[in-house]
Length: 460
Image 1 (spheres, rainbow, N blue to C red):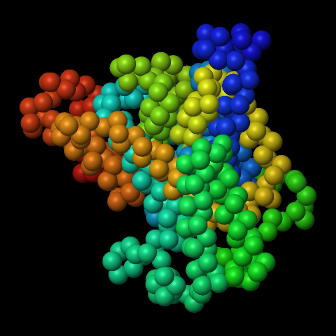
Image 2: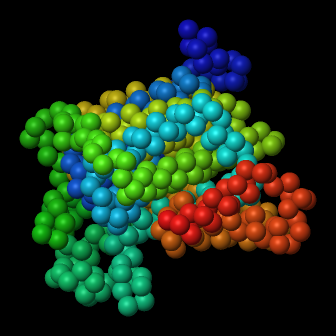
């Protein structure tokens, strides 16, 4: 049966290899079960409910990828997209999280249509190979930057950004923190990055998840010894899991189907829809580029063979995830870890999905993990994505310069989509100005995208 469904022999693999690959993928991306609830809680959402929504969205999305595309890729609420949801749309633009979820739901529906009509596939194939690598690198820097901020290793200051100090932290935030709350957590985060780096170098399976758990355990030891003193008023909580309710699954009711359709035809809401549509489209394409590039699954022309099925799975998962109560569900770059273990078919994805389902019963553990323990995961995931910089041709400046602009714009403008905009615009303009457009065979769609991005800056 497995052979018939997943064509194992045709893809040069077997059930044992696929299952091991699926376990590896889960181990490398299970951190999202701790990180996503923490990020969306900043937008005012119930942290326990978001944990359940995250696990269910990952379960559904990954099964869809397995059966729609037969790829070993896993899906979950995406890093970068959850940051955009919480910090840009809700906290930055001032929209309620219910409105933001509705925008995610509607753009998911639109994406289903676009996936069936090959629009997203055409955009994926139109982006030049070097720019695809740059997108992956830029996302890596953006995610690492978020990790450094979450750990408070980087804080605001007179120089816009500065390295953490207790005095600087108190001055920026107007609080009276001390080494025993804010200071020790920053030190633990730095130690966590070094520990995770050591595990990566030693090629330990599930190195990112182990890095999170070891950093968290060190924090618990510090709490027991009095080096860390919880200060809930400043957001520094106790580090022990709360098993008072047993291993029950947190209720989805605070966020399930909380879509707010009133006023969806207003200009303001349309702007939010466009923002999500824009960011999600190019974040999804960017992540698929990063995953498939890292896993060496693109053909000689830089195309993903069954991309329509992958995009459709992504679009349906986004829509379902919005109903469940989480930000955009997308393909995870950590899926490349399972591929490196030999995973080649949807059986790898099915294995990962089952493990996400089982993780639902471990919510007290994942919800107790603090941000200083998850921050190292973001920094290391950023490193994994940064390695694609070697795939950029720096000998051709007309290729390398737009890539540089794309990469720099993502962390500096705090936006993945802005990086892609700047990359596409600069690629087209510089190659046209230098007379290399015909030589590069820039597609018509790239010209259209460049014009649309320029119009976006002029009118939105």
